[in-house]
Length: 81
Image (tube, rainbow, N blue to C red; front, top):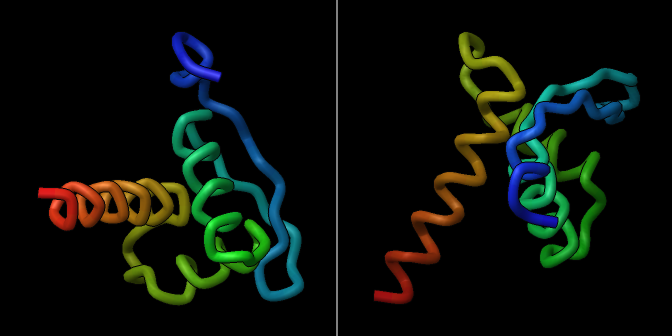
């Protein structure tokens, strides 16, 4: 999925450390999180729990997920150059 659908903001239910919660992300970030979890052979909940554990207290979880994706893409560009 690409195009206009990528920009749609959606709420996603996830389990973090055994607790149900939700995060709101644009589809493109959600798709990248899912792809990252798949490439690491872990569940999306495990990936988001890891992101949650590493984020700064003043950073909300949705922002932390976007930052994770941005850094991952930056690393790909750096290693490709």
